[in-house]
Length: 150
Image (cartoon, rainbow, N blue to C red):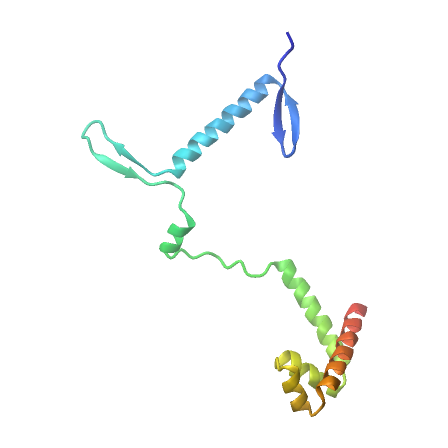
């Protein structure tokens, strides 16, 4: 009779183990499931002595329950590495903006900082919309080139 083989799945691989290791692993896994079930469920317990009923809440609380109790969660905010990258890009942009002429900078300010439409910006800067659009394209290419260099 062929000897029975035992395997445990670790990530996506199956690893051959002895029967003793397999049974111990499964016992520990079953024990964990049993305790997690007991910890996660609330229940009523009836005392045999005085027939009193007591309520035992679960040891785990749902997000909804925490929000109902006005639980404060720390603000996740921006990750440190994302913040560092953003700061580096802003520094590069700042350097690139210094290379623009005053007319080019005025156009950038109107469109991107004051968030005006091309129609509004062209009226403010007293130029045709087609001219504004052409200059905007040229300025953006210039900024891109400067930022890629540094």
